[in-house]
Image 1: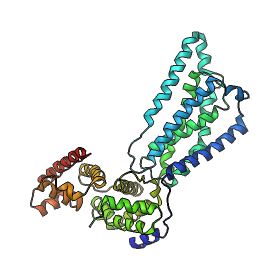
Image 2: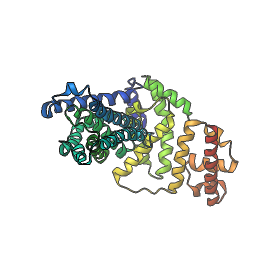
Image 3: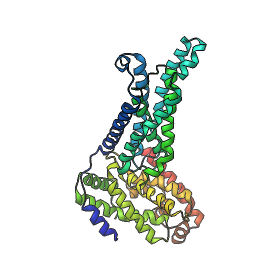
Image 4: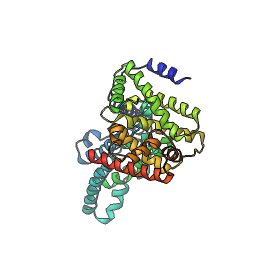
Length: 213
Length: 178
């Protein structure tokens, strides 16, 4: 095809584009993925029975605040990387703030607990499955983000895959908190973070294949 | 005559708002820019150049939603072009002779910064005549170092040094202008 013909055919299809297209598509992708994840939790794992009571307590909000703030930083980084002229990651350094704060809470916990109580504090009841569930539950949200990226132009594919995986892992961990009754900061710091990290790793591994354009 | 950054941006934003005429003008203006961008990097592969120009035009069209209206346009467009070129290398698994990769890398940073920020002529007016000629020949008209040397009656080393120093001076000026 001649370049002139190409231009003519492209110019025949000039719909107005919202200035907030990127943010809008990312929001839709995450929201749809989150609904699927939530349904998966509701139908297989179930919500914690004491959810209504727990929502009045500190630990529930500590967990949510941790995973939500990780999610916000990762989503901001992913949105930034959706544009071709983004050459390096932005916002990711913000991740150290929630991690550092939670580490302080965890240190306080250890300080108040006698040494023989440390292991149960760290492993809880569900350390064996927590991380893997978080990673698995992140899949629908990750798919939602990949869908959003179908109109984007990332150039750092592996990095973008990793931040998208991180974001979906953090969102999944937030929702997993509706099921998981674990209450110690040490537990969340280790096993939630590991699950989110696994999601980021998976994103980095498969990202380039799905993000190419 | 090349369209200025400001003009390209106005067309781009017009296209984003649904103005087909502005969008057409933008794509037409991009054709020579992209031809010389790819031509310089894939010397002697005219078909590939035209393929890449078309691929880039299509990507610029379908992914125009990722352009942030507050940011420089040329940097965005060249980023798309660069991605398309690298992607093609990857797809065809072919090595392409790129003379002086270092020069190209320097030129890319220069391109982003300068195409986005000011008129090339005004810029080149600010450095020595010899450096400006060397940069114009190699970076804008796409000649190789050897060709530029022959055309300008200078030695090849002289051209290289002039380009290097000229770019450095330009970079310093751009920073100072900030």
